[in-house]
Each structure stands twice: as structure tokens, then as C-alpha cells.
Image (cartoon, rainbow, N blue to C red; front, side):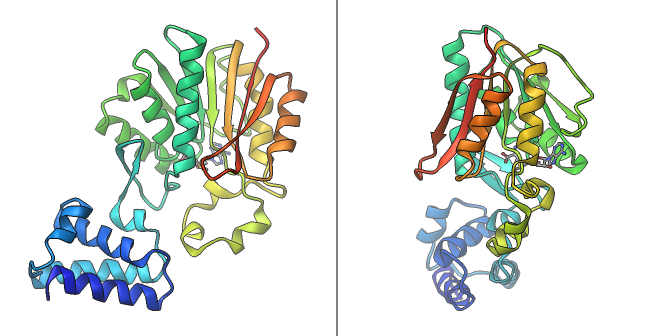
Length: 285
Ligand SMILES: C[S@@+](CC[C@H](N)C(=O)[O-])C[C@H]1O[C@@H](n2cnc3c(N)ncnc32)[C@H](O)[C@@H]1O
């Protein structure tokens, strides 16, 4: 069968299994199997697949039919124009998080700090730390996670994107806050687990395939947020900034947590979808 016929068959299979955006998945999987970009893949409609190619493609389509996340099958996800390797041990980077990084870049540039020191809590694939290191060539980043396998992956991604010499990955539990580094950071950034535990079972199957550690924000979704806001004043310099991604309904509660911890200029910003998504505040200078 040709590329075009396999695409049609793959799409129909995914439609039957109610997979969202079935054509998109079929095209991305075909492109990955052919080792070309998605647009190139669809222009090769008349190319015949070998038996081995057909087998690989169909295996992946079946996986997607079981609602495995597309990024887990492909093994990577684009993030601000770079290819981030992902595994089942890490959250798939999201577009909202790209916006968080752009906001952090803007904040650091506006602060005019010459060699900014950045602390990221819960680095996962390392996407935030790596993108910030690339966007801010004079920055050094200290990135933590509890998951050893996520840290190994983040390190691998940092090597692939040539910023590993400016990022230190450290295994640290955000609830233990042992490592200290008092008054060190100009910017602290985090996309913490923020989904209330009771909501986890109602999520799309693709999200449920991601590590619970990356999603579960405890009873009210704010358990990790609270711990990070509490540790931030100890880790930030005077004038240092805390920027966090949060759940769409958490804005007022998180703004209150920031203020209670002594942050000033607290703002809750919306993402491109119009949802309140980012909390930002500064330690008084
Ligand atoms: C929502 S994911 C964010 C991953 C990545 N920064 C991103 O934006 O795609 C949250 C991350 O926090 C980590 N994490 C969860 N609990 C933690 C803890 N107690 N201490 C440190 N990291 C933790 C998870 O392993 C996961 O990588």
C-alpha cells in the first residue's frame, strides 16, 4: 500500500477509536517512520511502504488507538523550536509552558541582571531550563526534580542542545527544602504538579498515561505550589522573581499565597487560551 493509503487507513482506525485529531496523529507517525517532516510525508503519497515500514507504522497507529500520547510514541516533542526527547518518565512539554519561558525571558531582560542565576523546581524533560539557557546565554540554571529518570533525561536533552555546561541538575525533594542556596537566585521558575488528586481519574487517557508525580497536586492541587512559594523567599535574592505555572482556577488562591509569603507586584497572567495560568511576584528589593 502507498503512503496515502496507509494514512487513510490509519486515520479511519483512529476515528473509530475516537482519538482526537486522528489525521494529525496518522501524519506525524508516518513522518516519523519515514524520517522526514510531516509536510514532506504527505507529499510522498504515491510512495509504497516496505513490509517493515508498514509494520512499524501500524504498530504505532495501534498504540495511538490505545490513547498512548503521540509524543511518547514519537519519543520527542517540539518546545520553542527545539526537539525535546520525552519518555514515559516525564511530562510531555505543553504550549502553555512555552509561554511561561517567554515570560521569564522578558522578566530577566527587563531586570537588566547581567549574569542571571535561575532556579527551576521540577524540571521533568528539562524543557524550561534548556530553553531559558538558550534564550539567555549569560544565565546559569540550577534545575531540580525528585525523579531520577526525569533528571537523566533532562541531562541528555541539555547535552543535545549544547547547554549542559550552564545547567546543574540536582535530585531534590521540593518538600524537604534541604539544599538551601540562600539568597542565590534572580529568578525561580516552576511548572509544579497542580491537578487536584480527585480530578486525576477524569483526565483524558493521554494525560493519565503521564507520571502521577508530575500531575498530582494533592487534595486541593496546591500542595506543591504552597511548598515552592514558602521556600522561594529563602532562595531568591532581594528583587528576585518567582514565576509559576498554575491551574486555570487557582489564580486568586495562588496570588494570596504569594502575598502572604511577602511577594510584591503579584500578577496572575492568562495564557493564549485565555485561562489564568501564570503567577508572578517579586521579593522586595
Ligand atoms: C508538571 S511537571 C513539569 C515538568 C517540566 N518542568 C515541564 O514544564 O514540562 C512537574 C515536575 O515536578 C516533579 N516533582 C513532583 N514532585 C516533586 C517533588 N516532591 N520534588 C521535586 N520535584 C517534584 C515531577 O517529577 C515533574 O517532573
